[in-house]
Length: 268
Image 1: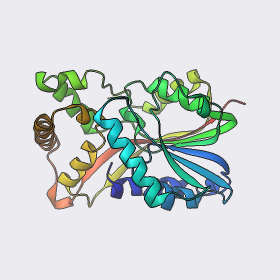
Image 2: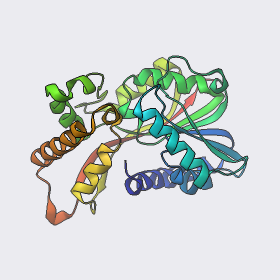
Image 3: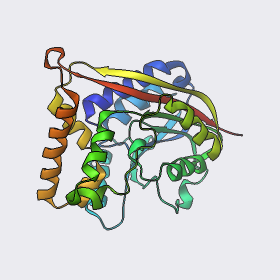
């Protein structure tokens, strides 16, 4: 998501869990920190002064995305890193071979709307579980339902895009109570749940085209497409989205339903 929307998401989260976050200390990691500004300016100041943070960005071997991610990490460290307090690294949270240096290394793990784009969400949660020390906590925001998921299913039927989208799955699409399935998944991995709720969120003053660019900025599969196909995909995704949603211009924004706010704690 774009910084403006992501900032709003994280700010809401920080406000809701203000008192719990003040007690968060020790070694922390924020999964997919982007360019680093939100981790430094919103999340880190909300934690106990003894907290130390690592910002993580996704990495895949030998793809354009890996180079983009490494450049993003370099920028984040240069602009927002703080000696002995905050640094940024690359890591694919879905890896089946979690590096030894991350195992049982963190007291707290954070993730703001990003994990819903994982191809293997269970592997991601298992890695996060294994990254936590006994008694550690995992704080997460999750997009459980949004019109973009249905549009992606439509786009996956197009032969030009199918090979890039075949791995994509929406874990909670069309569920009335997605938090129930999410809780079941957490428990099967080993987490003890302290809080898990499903919320409707609105971004009333968001321009539709800006919002769509925000959504598409999180589509990692675009890095695997040739540039001309990327432009075709963006144009067709925008057309399908606007057609399906009948955007209300008078209101100046589009309703964004069902964003899960989940807090979990690992079993000691």
